[in-house]
Picture 1 (cartoon, rainbow, N blue to C red):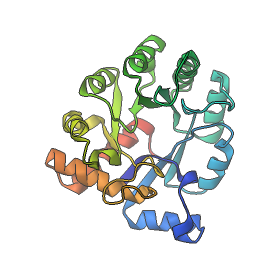
Picture 2: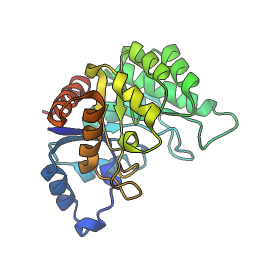
Picture 3: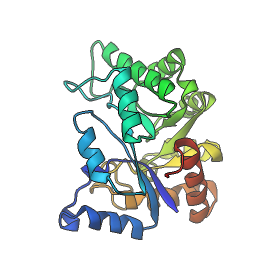
Picture 4: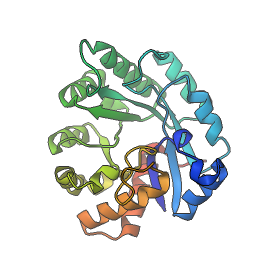
Amino acid sequence: MLIDSHCHLDRVDLTPYGGSFADLMAAIRAAGVGHMLCVCIDLEGFEAMRARVAGEPDVSISVGVHPNEQGARDPDVEDLVRLAATSGAVAIGETGLDYHYNDGDLDWQRERFRVHIEAARQSGLPLIIHTRDAREDTIAVMREAGAEAAGGVMHCFTETWDMARQALDLGFYISFSGIITFKNAEALRDVARRVPQDRLLIETDSPYLAPVPHRGKKNEPRFVAHVAEKIAELRGLSVPAVAELTAENHFRLFGRPA
């Protein structure tokens, strides 16, 4: 069974499915994907996201505010803990730091990150961490705020082995997306070869970052198969073995659905 450990089902383009979410889900299941984690990026859209996947036993959800979201409702710890408890969320996030599209004083990002870490600590849920162009600060905030007590995953990882090693030392998992199939991603593929087998996850981050051979198109959870194929190639494993070990890792981190 393949698992997409990070996707945004509420944002996937339904045009190829005649606007039918049910048909999208049928196509995903037909591709061998047995579970998905639908990740929240803002509180304004949380209830709509939750409603979209309600009744889908093979979809879990998270609650959080993406580091790039500005001008939106900024959560406090109590907000996140309460929403997680009442919605059955399995993770806090996605959160983290992203300096790629922002400049100037970014302490607001760091403070938001700290809020999510504290909410994860209080709720007992793992963190979903996004990081871009903020390696040192991401690890520094994780250490200062006690992210190790919550654990979680560095999602859609695109950074160096040194950063991966530091995150692993804090008890985090490393998740790879379709980026590892891109022609210019050899350094990242080397990281994917080195991550311990029991800390490895795969994802699509759909509808973004479609893997080869779909690069440039809208991404979907069924394309996680291409990520599994690349991981299998890099590590000398079969695709079913990669599916099995990443599924085991996913459920160890996020829990099995009821």
